[in-house]
Image 1 (cartoon, rainbow, N blue to C red):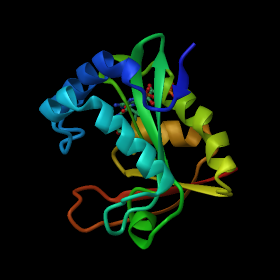
Image 2: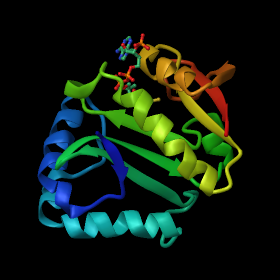
Image 3: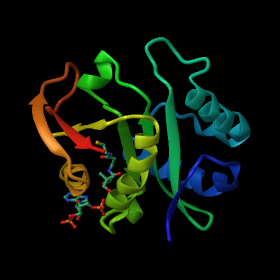
Length: 170
Ligand SMILES: CC(C)(COP(=O)(O)OP(=O)(O)OC[C@H]1O[C@@H](n2cnc3c(N)ncnc32)[C@H](O)[C@@H]1OP(=O)(O)O)[C@@H](O)C(=O)NCCC(=O)NCCS
């Protein structure tokens, strides 16, 4: 059974393959594969700092990253931003996620989001905001599967598609 874990070097090999796949579809553009290959321990340590809210870039909030894994295989990732900023209210919300292409359409997105919600509740978040592009049918179904209620659809500067904003009561 897949489960959520905190980032761990144990998954490096699988994670590096996932990174390559995501970049093939223009996701995770900011991650430097060579850097990660050489400094994976530092990368993992950064997640811990971000979780504790230490050394955050200006405008960032503390966030907890989880990996959805089965055995040694990395299937996807999801993170919880501990609070909303004005920017996150417009785009990004509390939670963001991706599932590797080869694992999509098998229920992982729905199961992973469902599994992370108790962790959001533990962070004293009462209502979770999740945003997605109006064209992202897969993500919309994932959000609806945990009781997401559509608030509205807004235009965000620099984005081609309108952004849908959903709330999930915990
Ligand atoms: C969105 C995403 C996380 C969904 O993950 P997933 O593991 O495929 O989700 P599930 O298998 O739980 O599928 C959810 C539903 O959406 C459907 N679906 C998934 N991808 C779809 C797509 N590209 N087009 C239409 N429907 C899709 C599934 O068939 C399923 O439908 P069902 O409820 O009728 O059974 C995944 O497609 C992904 O990582 N996409 C790229 C990154 C991304 O968009 N992240 C979210 C940003 S808001």
